[in-house]
Length: 290
Image 1 (cartoon, helix red, strand yellow):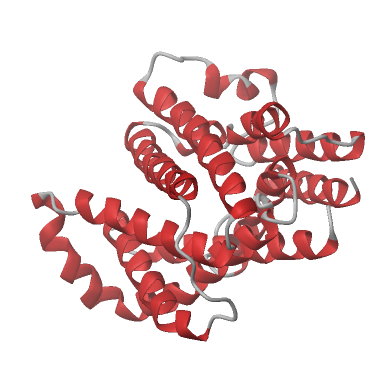
Image 2 (cartoon, one colour):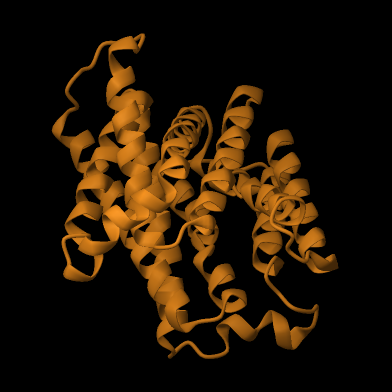
């Protein structure tokens, strides 16, 4: 994995953690995320005339990949939200990250990606670190807790979220390989915004849209450039690296999230969270070397 690709994806991870912190500070999460996409899409549109490369309309295949990625990522958020409504964070969170198990498989089977031994070990470390970050204690019983009842709605929704995200990752990896990452990201943001806007037409959300704006308009305006930076740096990095490496490296955002929680939100950290963050960091370093 090249230094440039690694740096871009790590920057994306930091930005990803920052906009997740903003979501955490909001009141109505679904509405706030929609406002973030509005701010990001608006900033994107204003800055497009300054882009160094001219816009070219994508081929039908690329449009299909953009649509596929948009549907997958919106469904990921919906399944994620459904899982959190009835499930505990320590159960749901690790299962939502199971996309990292599928992505190397799809990369090898569909994209003919080859992994080095160091890179594969790095991916396994990131997966284990991501899985353990929300555990309450280190024990065999605790490690199997998220999978103990596969029949519950929250567990099924979390597993569906991880699977659908992996499909979206392959779609966007294929898309940015044949089309400008800048315009792919722009069209992806617009497609996701359109799908989210359709969801917000439901009566329970309509009254909350302006309420969230009045309460957090400063945070919304700040979120636009942060989200845009997160999206662009990841897709430019994805264009220069195997998706099997790019998705795990982006989990450095968990390390950043742990540090933000400790330093700025006053959250308790504990030895397990710090150990999990260290595993993710070590895995990212191995991927870089691989």
